[in-house]
Structures are given as C-alpha cells and as structure tokens.
Image 1 (tube, protein in one colour):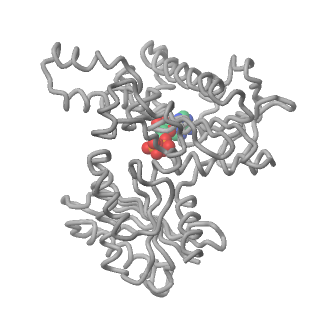
Image 2 (image 1 turned 180 degrees about the horizontal axis):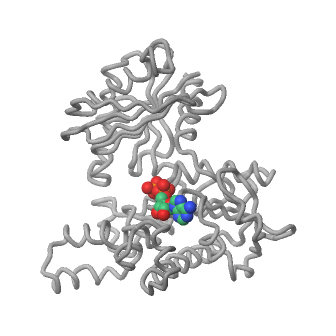
Length: 400
Ligand code: ADP
C-alpha cells in the first residue's frame, strides 16, 4: 500500500510518499512560500538527488498539484501514476473535543476541522485547504485526518479543566487540549516494543523536546496528561515560547509596555523561551556553545529548561503513581546527550539511572540508555509522525 502523508502549514507544506510494505518514505519534500513570491518545492526521492522546482503557487491547490506532479515525474518521481496512491493521510492540528481518534474525511469531519479554526488559527485553515485540494485532484482516493490533539482526548476532566468559571469552558471550550499527540502516541508504542512489554501494562512519560516541547503521561497506552494546554504555549519553556507563567503577567506587560493583548501573545509565542531569556538563539546548539563560552544568560536558559522538564517528570510520576519508562524524542531529546544527562541527574527518587556511555552513543536509533537493573527505563526513540499518520491511515482504509 502507498500512502501520501501531508502536513499543510499556512505557507508551507511537507509531504512523504510512504511505502507501507517497508514502512519507509519513497520520497519526501517541502513546498515553501505558498501564496508568496519565490514559492518553491524541494523533492527528495529515496537515495536520489534533491530536485528544486520554482513555481508560482498562489494557494494550497497549486502546491498540492505540484507535489503530485513531482511524485509521478518520469525523471525523479517514485510512482508511475497517481492511481498507485491508495490514500492520503493529513496531519490536522486541532480536533477540539469532538475528535478522539483518526478519521476518514467526510463532510462532518471537515466541519469539525472548520469549527476549530479559532483554536488553531494558523494550522486548521491550511489543513482544511490541503484536504479540499486533494479531494479536487484525487476525488476517488480516500483521505484520513490525523489530529495532533486526538491522542489527548483520554485526559480526565481533572487534568484538562482550568480553575476559571465553568461557564467559560461551556461557552468557549477553554480547556487543556494537549498537542504533539501523534508523536507521543508513536514513541510510546515503540517504547513498549523496546521494553518488550505490553503497552497496556506500562506507565510512561514521553518527553518530546524540540523547538516546541511537551511532556505526556501515558498510562496503559492512554494519554492522561500533556503539558501543553488550550494552545501550545503552556507547559515547558521552549525555543521561543514562554511556557507556564502567572496569568497576571499578561495585563501587567500590556500596561507597562503599552501594547495590546495580541502583541503580548506574539511576544510570549515568538520572542520568549530560551531565545528571549538568553538573548542568543532559540537553537539549543547555539545556547550550549554560548554557555560553554561563559554566557550567563545562555546557561540560565538551559538550566531553566532542564528544571522545567524535571518538574513535569516529578508531577507526572505522582499522577501516574510510578513510572516504568521515560522516553526522549524530537530534535533535542534525540540528539543532545547533555540535556538528557542533566534531566536524568538526581531522578534517583523515581528509579532513574542512566548509563553515560549508552547516553553519549545514542542517536538515530531506538535505544535503552538506562543502567542495567534500573527501576525506571530511560529510552531515546526517534519520533516519526509521518509513519504514525500513515499507519493510522492504513488501519482506517483497511476497515473500509
Ligand atoms: P520542531 O519542534 O520545530 O519540530 P525539532 O524537533 O526539529 O523541532 O527540534 C529542533 C531543536 O532540536 C532545535 O532547537 C535544536 O537546537 C535541537 N537540536 C537538534 N540537534 C541537536 C543537537 N545535536 N544538540 C542539541 N540540540 C539539538
């Protein structure tokens, strides 16, 4: 089976053509600057040279048309015709409260995506545009929507309700939704394989640490807590997002800096986090370099980040009533032995003890880095959201 996985952003689009027999990508690519001057597609067939195509792409329909042409191009394409595509799996950011799993796209699903435009203003309109474009281009091909929030719909009310008047939840659905669900679901399934135990018997903490970061408590295969909230701004301090802060700070900044609520929101999303704190960069590699050279604020940013992750691990260990395994994934979680070591230091209280050699050597592969006999396993598991989307898509269309 061949599945096209699409991840549409407001002006970009990522895709992978997945071969489900080998569970790997036959080609992957990126379209940038959709609707802007200088739009282009970069296409990489597996084992081949990258192809860059510059084109005028006024909207997502034009972008998807170009992707489909690239996929069947006689020179660098990987399929003979579009008929070989059995289904399209779309990454959709927000499913609100209505969606608790991946679903075959129909009119009701499109309406549910549209109803969440306000909750995911940058992503949901683009995700829907991608779906509509594919329907126009491949009307006979089934489409599946895989939601970033769906995995967290198993969170109990005590985890997702905020301490604000209940009417605000009823009126505007202000609650925690949780994000990165596709990644947390994938790595927790893989952790069970690495641990050689059934997922239904495991209490796991999944740490997705990248530019955006979140932790999930996974109890017996279900998400019961995620550190992100109503939007992806809550939780850990991240690359450019502040994470948790006293809500009274928002009107205080508005008054002192004479800026609007929208401007504070932009400040907290785009100019805060390790970038705002260090004044150096949102990239942890730059931070580490600056900290090594003696930059106090860069070191402080790293220390705050590590402290935040530890704090959530401790909280989730309590919520889970014990932890069998901790997973590190995404750009930072997969590639930074130093961050993993700093987080795992002094977590003996929950049975964590990592092997320094295994930790230093980890990267690119699924690996257990805990010391032999440690009560709580620590694993590095590369995330693969595209494969998770393709697997969900395959499962749904096989049932059709
Ligand atoms: P996104 O949330 O945008 O998907 P990624 O998961 O790709 O982000 O993670 C990007 C982050 O991973 C960057 O901040 C980068 O600093 C960090 N990162 C990637 N490789 C390394 C590395 N070798 N050491 C430290 N940090 C790394």
